[in-house]
Image (cartoon, rainbow, N blue to C red; front, side, top):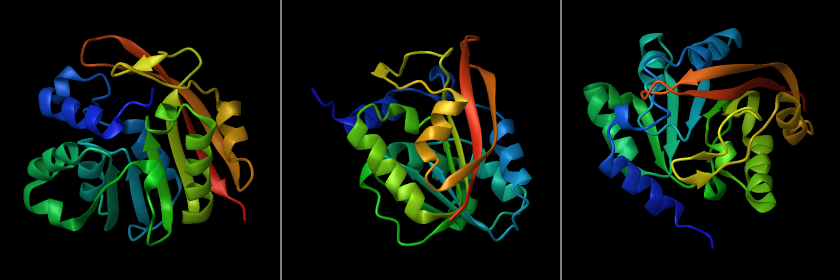
Length: 204
């Protein structure tokens, strides 16, 4: 049975604080490092897919990036981020959408996704995502998923694990791999989740 994904995530963000969910990061270091390593200018168009109330946007603003979009299926998650950012929230473009139904109105120089792609467990969902990325990403794709050594579920939902080569295969039609790493994310509960994190560059 197909779950109501929007309802699921609205409930999560309504009932749990950042220190009660496994994905919270005080400092999204790997994501920031990969974004910096693209050497794109501070006017680069960046979108954070499934950004929720992640603090990546705070750090990007602090570093002077000027064109940031945050997309999430949960309106409550984005409202939480907006509240945290205060006046700075006005500098961000906020989009409430399921990623598989996202119809971008512009291209993005950097597409960042930490832990959204791995929730797409059917071939149809994966294909929709890949098509959007192939069409809308102009320069770099940064993507993080649970690795084949990581959890098989998150927030009670099944996920799809990926090795670096499996991620590479998904996007090889229009992207070349710059690098892939695996790393342990330590959750607020002191457990470890092993991630695969890759950066790809658009080839055509």
